[in-house]
Structures are given as structure tokens and as C-alpha cells.
Length: 358
Image (cartoon, rainbow, N blue to C red; front, side, top):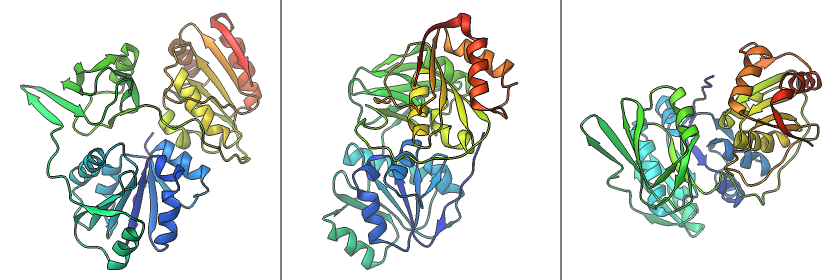
């Protein structure tokens, strides 16, 4: 399922990641530049924007570089981030710049290091003055990124600022844990054929291959210690919906897939926790299909009342069975949540090893 959102405005501000919201920087920037058009990228960033009451910020359900490339209505762009390091922040913005081919004035603000970079063009002196008034100092752009190397038909991508123990994700699929600060992924013929500094999760590689050929040059690849800290306070509101949706190892698409639903069937240990945590904010219960191989991408566990968690022998097999037989290979069925919960319980009873209700 693909969702398209284009950005437009004389001045567009794009937030990325949850920290820029959770630490109050996004709200501060909105107050400082009230006439800008505000957008954000990322599932956890969207959740953080919700928790912090910034509901007018528009979410882009795609990679920033892709959205910037197709958004012809941008007159100037500021990217606001809280990266791990100054260099990783510059690398992130340079990748967006190169992948999008953007030609309008471009700046990024790095709230973590207290610096900003004007990559090209000029910005009104009033905006520059206001940014400097926050104690943020001007820095210089990154000239080059040594992140790719080629050897015959293979391409190796180096990941920056990794820490030992980090989760390594590719296309939002967890493929392993970092065992070193020097992490690399080698691809040939659209498949991962080698890695460096990663303890591979075989099941993750299998899921990645099912998504089709991997273009390592443009795919989203990153390393993180967790998707969002567990000490945030969720903003909960009541919503009304109908029907039940099916979410299979696709936590990054939870907002698009679950829009207007009464409940969700979710497959995957970490996916169930991610989706359960997000839908908790909208009082939407989930039927979680897991098999006990949770990695801990998200630390907390929140489920709306009337949610259930089934631990089965193989969550992928059980999930496929439900998708084929109950959902008729569709992402949504127009049945009441309680009825679906009862049907799921009956259909998978012989595969269940453990059960929890909330």
C-alpha cells in the first residue's frame, strides 16, 4: 500500500525523529516561525508529535528524499533533527539533498549539537537571527560521505555512528544487532550477501528478501538503540471506527493501515508491541500473534483494554493462515472486533502456547 503526500510552501520545515518533539524543540520552532508549512517524517516522529499536541504538523509516509524530490511546491526547506552526532546529522541531510536533487535554499538545524548549516541559497536574516537567538551556532556543510564502495557487481554501504548492541534495520526490517561500531552491508543482485559488524537475524533477512530486490543505494538503513524511550507520556483520545485490519510485520505503516478501524490483528512480537503502543493512544485494541522472539525495539508494552496476545509456535505461519482464511487476503474485514477476536481464538487454538488478555 502506497500513500503519497507532497510538501509545499514558501518555507517548509521538516522534522525527523521523535526526539525533536519530545525535547520541546519542534514546539519552539513552530512558535518562532509561525508562517511556515510544517511536516514530519517517520512513524515514531508522528507518534511524538501527537503526544506533544502538535496535530497540525502533516506526516509524510515515505522517505524524506523521495518526498522532497517530488514536491515541486517547496520554495525553501529547513530540516530539523536531533541526531546522535553532528556528523551523522550532516550525513543524513546530505543524503536527502543528493537523493532529491533539491535546488531551492536548504538548511538544517541540529538541536543535539546546537548547530545549523545553510547548504545552499539564502534565508531571511530574521530567521537566521532567531535561530542564533536560541544559542545555535552556524556550521559548515559536509563535503563528501564515504558510505558506499563497489567491488565488481557488489555494493557495500557503511552505516555511521553505530554503537555496539544497536538494532540494525533495513527497509524498517530488523536484520540484526551491531557487534562493532564499524557496520556495513554488502548487496549483490538485490540481495544481502555479506555484512560487517552485525550479528545477523536470519528471520529478518528472510522477511527482507520477500519484499523484493534491495537497492542498497536508496533503501532506508539505520542503527538505533530503541525506537523511542519508554518514559514518554502517551496522549490518549477516543476514536470511533469499524472493521478490523491486518498488520503483518509492518509497524511502520500502522497509521495508514489502521485509519478508521475498530481493531487490528497484528503479526510479530516487536510489531505487536509497536502497533499496540501506538493504537493505545486511540483506544484501539489489538489481537497480537507472537511466538516469543521479541527483540525489544520498543521498550514499553501498552495495549488498549480488550486486547489479547497469543503466543503461538510460529507467528508467520499462523498469521498467513488468518490472512488467507479469515481476511480472504485483504487488509481489512468489515466485522466487529469482538467477533474477530472470537474467530481468531477458535481458528488458532491448537497452535497457542500462551495467552494474555488486557
